[in-house]
Image (cartoon, rainbow, N blue to C red; front, side):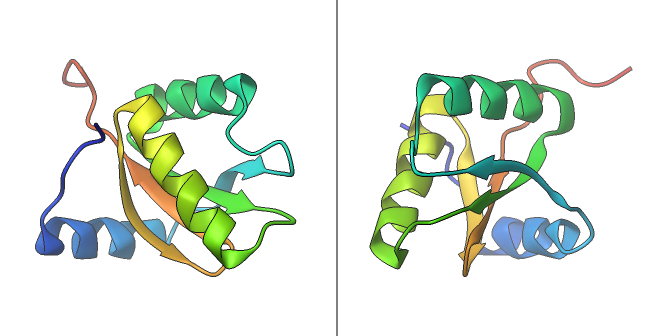
Length: 95
C-alpha cells in the first residue's frame, strides 16, 4: 500500500510542486518495470517528483498514478491534467 497523506500535507506538497519541472514522462507502456525503477530512484534522490503522462486517457492516468504510488511506496499528492506529483520521505535524513 502507498503512503498516506493528510489534506494539509497534500496542499503543502502541491505548492512545492508548482516550482518543479516534470522529471519523468510515462508513455503508452504505462507502469513498466523501467518506469517504476526510475520513479523509485528519483523519489530516493528528491522526495518530491512530478511526472507527465503522455498519450493516456483520464481514467488510465488515475489508474497509473495509483499503481505507481503502490509500487514505489509513495503517495500521489495531486494530479491535474497530464501531470501527477508523487512524494516519499527519505529513509535517512539528508546530511
